[in-house]
Image (cartoon, rainbow, N blue to C red; front, side, top):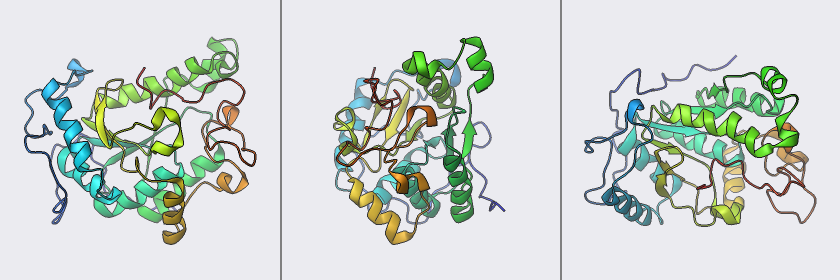
Length: 283
């Protein structure tokens, strides 16, 4: 039986601001930083995607630098204090996402968390969603494309992931996140800088022009070992596919186990030259 989570905040439902008693008390903050509460031009759905001012971009860069030495918990607490309830998180239930969820459960479990359910996820991934709910009381919402897998493949004469994986990712992931993004000001991701060359320069806090949101990456400067050390130490639920050689897990048709010595993300879109789904690239 799935545990009942505290009511998740969605900006269309409730605009009440909640702050924990000690939230962000020891976290540095850039003076004049443009937040949810003091910006006259926060995005509304009709104005999406919003274009930030040069001053806001500078403030985000300075805030990111201030948070470089902060712990992930402090970064999350800052994000909650600055943006909640218009803060969201997307997770594919990777090790990093599970670690952040364990932290979020202690800091502010009402943050709206969602998964991009393409229709091609492993059963183990969806089962992990239930285990996370049982452990932390956080029920991750499944956000799906408008078309089911059957409808999508019928419309395109077969599986698009076989002929054009970039289009498949865009239509079943990117467009869904763009839809969700319209209701929020900031989103959190679980990317790490050491995962790939594309992610090596990821800031802790920055502007995501693809989704018109501030993007916060609490684990950007953590290593793979730090993530797994935390999982083992706290017995955080994780995907059992990791124990079978799947170091990075996405959709089942485009994911394989890696061989000894291969890169962490070598099992994603293997043999296609594709290395990212597009969620965390600037183009």
